[in-house]
Image (cartoon, rainbow, N blue to C red; front, side):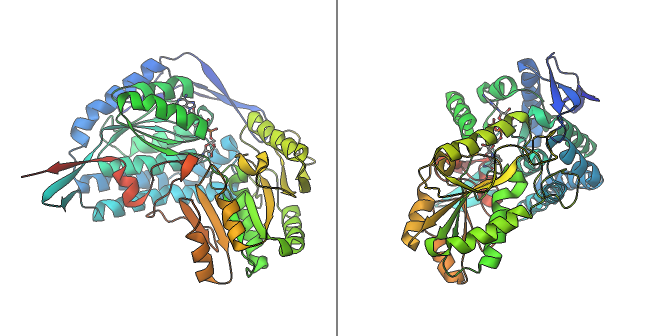
Length: 471
Ligand code: NAD
């Protein structure tokens, strides 16, 4: 049984002033793994003060110094590869496969941050003027549980590139993962106060970050509901905000697509990170005349998908993070049934032999229309809806008929044709014939999937305030 009773403020592990504990429960067995002592408003204020103090000098560091800090962090993370993978598997229930990819993603954040520092011009000429891109100030980083350390690495590394200092609030459910990354960041020897990490609840620690006038910007990843609360609060002090929110990503299979490639990709897109992914391709749009063929392929693939102990290297779908998340997914499966959609495979309840954990049956619905709640709302579990279309125009219309717009997928034998369709989709990223991540390209949502972009130059500029010197 582990007890995590330290947060990180001003270069030190300190005991929070908060007195409430939160139980850490294994998603795989529902046994108690440990507990975490939660920070409160005062802890958050102390963290913000430390970051504010550090900003005075850190904002003036050179690119060479920042590159050195980024390399130091990357090196200390490299020493703990197995620990990172194991703690994500144990605490979050992420599969070994996903946790391994996630670990590589963490390391790559620092490569792209260094790349930015080597190439970005912080002073530009615009019109007749000199424009200085200046660090914005103290950044509040608020993140969810589904890729906790990945988010910390990508957001913190961008803040360091910009010369900003930070207060990080991960999900309370990620305390062991947070402890590990904090140890690595501590070892990296950054100036004190550049990063501060407070475990705690959203309505306490997150709310203080959203309210506090000394936070200049919030970088938030999480649900659209909480994103809106943060945005409303942030405007009172004119904080800048980057919101990476939910999604209901369409995956258009064009008539000429090679189904033997497109359908395995579609299942991967729908069930990545056990379906707990904002970019999951959860609406599969197929030509009406291909439905029978698609059904056969999908059913076979899903029946062969390994659901189970996330430790096993061949497991593709692990448990949902919590009992609450399990119930949410069950509720949506029930909604789909009540709405008249038909289950192709999966359904309510736990897979046989996995009754102790928060496991759900990977589920595919057919006879779905795009107005049903299962096609409109983010489920955040391995539930896929298949929707048919007659023409390409109709496919685009269905794809765009959503309040979200984070990511989309298109498969076709003809790249030009896929490119043409992709250009007509309202989403921050469109994946053509694959699933990839370009850390130098922008990531973020249209519509209710968010505000602003992360990654690359656009992501960096969200941490900078332009100042024009006119002579
Ligand atoms: P959530 O919105 O409930 O919580 C996210 C974070 O916000 C947590 O740290 C939480 O403690 C904090 N929070 C909660 N209430 C708050 C408040 N009132 N003020 C300030 N902070 C508060 O999300 P979750 O359930 O942890 O994660 C799942 C959601 O995250 C899904 O909707 C998913 O789509 C989204 N997500 C988005 C992306 C993306 O990049 N767009 C990536 C991953 C997850």
